[in-house]
Image (cartoon, rainbow, N blue to C red; front, side, top):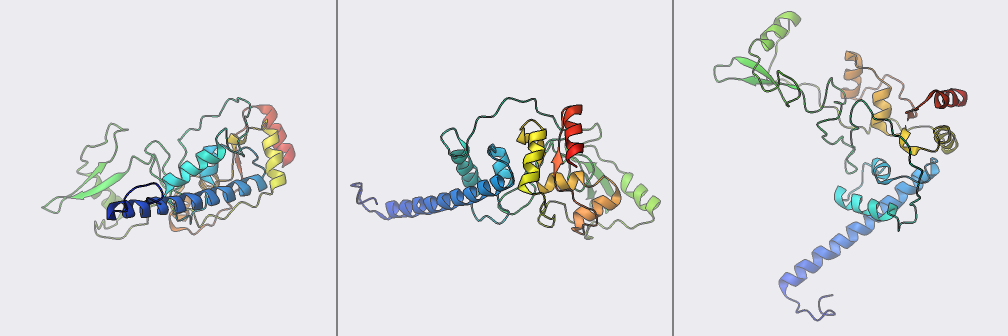
Length: 260
């Protein structure tokens, strides 16, 4: 306490003390949650996960600020942490799109402009926005700066789409929700033994295997209209794969096929 430190117990000091006490409680809870996530990963065959790997597997219902969770993860898997192990240097596969990151607090996909849009076509920073002028005329504009048409008003697009589809475009109408909630994606049924065998076939490189819901849902679907509908409504009619792997050579592919 402040009295034990020889500091006068003023209202300000008491308020600061309460804040510090709350932070300590939150960090202790964060450490407990991270420990449980590490145990879960170990049970699935991941014996030396890195920071990003642990963060991906934090529970969606955690009532702890993401920043504190990230600090707790760093502490737990740092060189001084019990779960840290040095792994050999490997050549990582660069994905076509940047990975989406899941918020541990609510299971929602976080915004990443360079990531592929989940449940939509293109990238997260690119989408068409319908605008209505004071005279009630409509124009469409693409967000972002990725394409030549980005930021330019497309005055005839809305009327063209309405005419071709014989549909009424109502700016006040309700559309499908943005796809981001992954809690309706079922958990993987892959056993720890099977996970370990797959990792071994990849030379022990755990960064090239994923049981994450976002990766499994994306690789279990294409980019058809039906796929987009299923992902955005949560009515999953497709089989979600249990695991996604990124082999680097023919030998690893053969090993994976043999396991299957």
